[in-house]
Structure formats: C-alpha cells, structure tokens
Length: 297
Image (cartoon, rainbow, N blue to C red):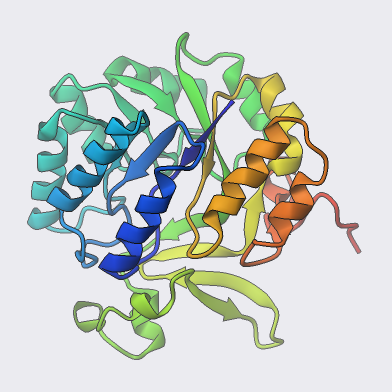
C-alpha cells in the first residue's frame, strides 16, 4: 500500500501553505493532492500557484492530482473548474458530478472523490465508463460494506481509502465559521485563518461534537485506520489517504510508514501528534465517534 497526502482542507496563510509543501517534498508519500476543494473564497493561492507546486512535486518524483471544488456555486467556480480540466498536465480528482461530466467529455482519466457518494458497484461501473481510474469510498462506509462492493468492482479500478484526519462529513452553501462570528458569508473576514485545524464545536455539556471548517463540517475526533492495516491489505486497498494537519504532519507520515513496515508502537507514536482523540467507529459499522480500543458503556 502507498501513503497519499490528501488535499489541504483548511485555510492557512500563503507562507504557511508554501512552507508545509516544501517540507512535504521529503515525505515518503507516493501521491499528493493539491488545490482548493472546500471554499472558493480561499484564494491566497491562485491556480497558477497550485500548478507551480504540482510541477515541483512531479519533479520530485511524486504523482500529482488536482482536487476540484466540492460545491460549485457560481460561474467563477465553474470557470475555475474548466481551467483545471483544460490544463491536461495532471490528473484531476472530481469531487462533484459536474466535474465528472467535464472530465469525461474531455476524455481525461480522473479520480472519483469520496464526495461523489458511491455506495454500490453499479455507480462505480458508471464512473469507470466515464473515465474514473481510482475512487474513494464515502468516509462513513464500513469495512463490511466496502468488502461486498469490491467483490463486484470494475476490473482495474484502484481503491484509495481515507485513513487519517478529521472526517469531512458534510458541505453546505452556508459558512458556519462566519456564522459563529455573526458575519455574513460574503463578508466572512476570512476567519478560517484563525483556525488552522478547524473550529471545535462542543455540546452544552462541554463534550466534543464536531469541527467547523467554513462550509465544511468535520468530525471532532481524528479518524485513524493505523490499526487496521491487515484488514486493508486483505481488501486489496492500493492507497491510504492522510489528510493534512497544521503541525507534525511529517511525523504522521512516519508513524504510518512504521506501521506498514510492521514496527511495534506505531499507533502510540501517532497518538502523540494527533490534534484530537482517535475514532474509527464507521470502519466497524458503529457510530463514527467510537474507537475500536474503547469499550462501549
């Protein structure tokens, strides 16, 4: 299995983004996803900047994929999507069905992102016919459901699984971070910059509940399948996606590499640098906030 660096889901300063990716060039990952996939108002890096980074990673021997935006809400969003599709130098991750249509019409092979919500082999067959060569299951899909689906998956379709990071659960036209500050979405003052790993949301009892990331809602806990590598191998999973976090991402990659090599203590090393408690309930067909090492009450 290969380790993959997923797209940056948060809004960081330009300097922080460039510094993160400069460090990432030395990480032992086979593929890097680049681009803004969450909010079109996040434009400290333009498409030309993402393409320049893509060229640098390609020169460093890593496969590059450009991630498309998940919600297309305006003509300017559609124009940006068309520019990404037309570039032609790098594979594209389609995160909504409009991107699938444009990529298929252009005859460009693509990655089917998890937000396409593929729950059955028939849908996967359709995507394969349109040009998808790799897909990601929805983040809430259990191991058992995935195993049943893969038994009937199209030949040659590569499967990549979201294996680490706060789970991207939902998207909305409303910006919840702006709402938290009583600001309209169109005048959000880019408050996401103040929350490099998202804005924690708690219940009235003070319990961790969700994480707000602009128009994206994430889990409060950090999804981790580092303890499920034997099961992932048994399913024939080709790649494990690691979602960026603001600190210690290099150590996250090292922990997963150690686990893949069979070293003991890798999960403990990972736990030291996680920005929240580990969860993996969805993988086991349970509530997403549960963890396999915890005993249910």
